[in-house]
Every structure is written in C-alpha cells, then in structure tokens.
Image 1 (cartoon, rainbow, N blue to C red):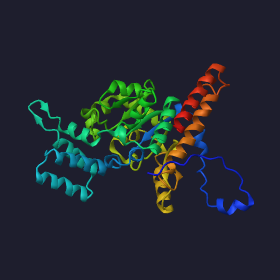
Image 2 (image 1 turned 180 degrees about the vertical axis):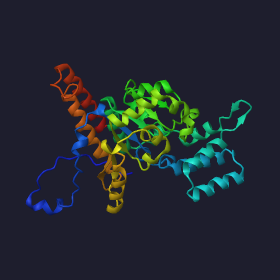
Image 3 (image 1 turned 180 degrees about the horizontal axis):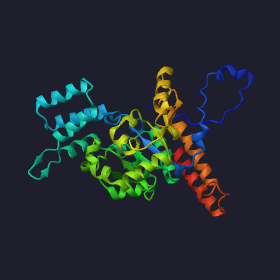
Image 4 (image 1 turned 90 degrees about the horizontal axis):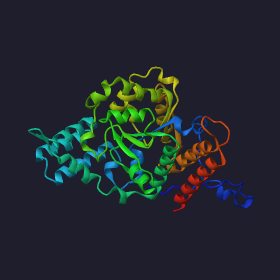
Length: 356
C-alpha cells in the first residue's frame, strides 16, 4: 500500500511552472452534507478495506476469501482436517460458494464437541492467523486509524464487520483504551447503542480475541434479535444518525448488518448515510450509487486510488473535529478558554503523532 500523500496548501503556479504543475492531483472535495456533520451524529462502519490498508501483508484481512483461506491453511498446518475435508473446502472456495456458509462450516468443523466440552482448535487457528498484528501495521494505515480514533474521541460510534482489533491496538499506543464488544453481551451492546460506551468498538461478527463470540449468521444472535429493547435502540441509530461506511464492499448485503439495521427500518430512502468508495469504472460507480439510494446511502468517491482514502478521511475528520472544538454542544457559542485550550492540546497531540 502506497504511503499517504500529505495535504499541501495549494498555490497559484508561476507562469514558467504552470505546465509542470498541470498534472498535479487535486484533493477530492469534501461533500458539504458530510463535512458539516458533528462527530456525535456519526456511526463509522469499518470494513475489510480499512484493515487491509493498515496491515496489507496479512491476507486474512483483505477479504472474506482471504480469511477463510488463512483459517484453512492454519487448520492444515495443525493437521486438524482430513485430506478429503480439506479438498472439499478448497473446492468450495474455488467455486465461489457462499463464503459466509463456507466459513460457518469450517468453524463448526474446527469446534467439535466432546461431551459438554467444545474444543479450542478454532481459537488456535484464529491466533495463528492474527498473530502479531501489531508488528504488521503500516504507516499509511495508521493515519486512517488515527482519524477514526479522533472522531471516536469527539463522540462518533464505531462498529465493524472485521474480526481483528487493529483499531484497539492503535488506540492503546495513543493512550486511549477501547473496549471490544460482540453481540453476545446484550447489556453492553444496549449501552453502546444508547451512547453510554462511545469508546467501544462493536464487532458485529465477533472479534478473534473472543472466539466464543464469533457468529456469522443472524440465527446465532437469537437472544439479541428477540430482545426488543436492544433491537429498538440499535435500529434507532440508523434512523437518527449518519452511517459512514469505510472500506466496505458489500456490508449492506451482510445478513447480520441487515438484521440489525435494515430490515425493520422503514423509509430508508429519506435518511442520509455515506459510503466512501474508490472511483473506478464510471458505469460501476453509477450502478453502485443507484443501488444504495433506496437504503438512504450516498455513495461518494474519495479518489482514484486506495491510497487516497487516508488523506481524504483525515481532512474530513479534521474538518468535523475542528468545528466541534470551536463550538459547544449543538453549535452554540464558542467554548470557554479552558475548553478551547483542551481542544488545542488534542489537536497539537494529533499533529505530533502525524509527524512522528
């Protein structure tokens, strides 16, 4: 992954250098309806694209297929599958079967019960796949995580479909403790939805550090789905806040995401959410936009390359957080001198981190 290009102040080129600068890439403009949001009005949805940008050398972070292949390789390394079973899983991968179902079947195979005891083979494979993530994080990806953390500390909520804890690892190095939540803890999920646990990351499929909480299909979350109070609070978020999808390909098609946020929410096209995507082929971009509108999602481009996302999102986070620093509450008058100094110190710390 290429390093992010720092934002530079644009200057009018001199006549003799105009040709040389004519091909310089201009930063993508920030959409007014997005950049004027306040951090507490946002829910950031983190997909595999973010994790793969942070640690691109880890295949399991790049896609569902990469994760299943990594688990399958680990299972074979530990001699946990019969040859015929291994070939069958590999065939399903090559045939592009429903990958969630393939992953579910593999997890079940690696979690056999003996009496009332469930084996820890799946846990062993997970730790093998996600071993030593801290040392595999790259500079450009850290810029992206820093912007996410900046918005979290200003009041944004964060959920992810990823199993990794890269954001939590990064935050710990910045002196901020983030809690990893999964849907098996109804009480904490309710508190998260009620904005009482802002510095928590909700992993809707689970997190690898708690294998027992990993579930790939809504049927595994029957307790949460039947708990009307929890579901009401979760779905209220989609109706009252703006979701910002980062590094998400088919998250809105994810069955768990649909069960939590989409199925019971009416009049979605009246809502305002945002999906940041790379601007590839014009036809595909337009098709994606059209398909998202009925879910209340504006699809916008952060640039032509994946490497453009950290720089774009950094500008967006700074725009939002700087406005929050200079206003109090719901856009009321300027903060007190002490509050302004605290805000200045936060920005100063972020700038120091940027140049480190």
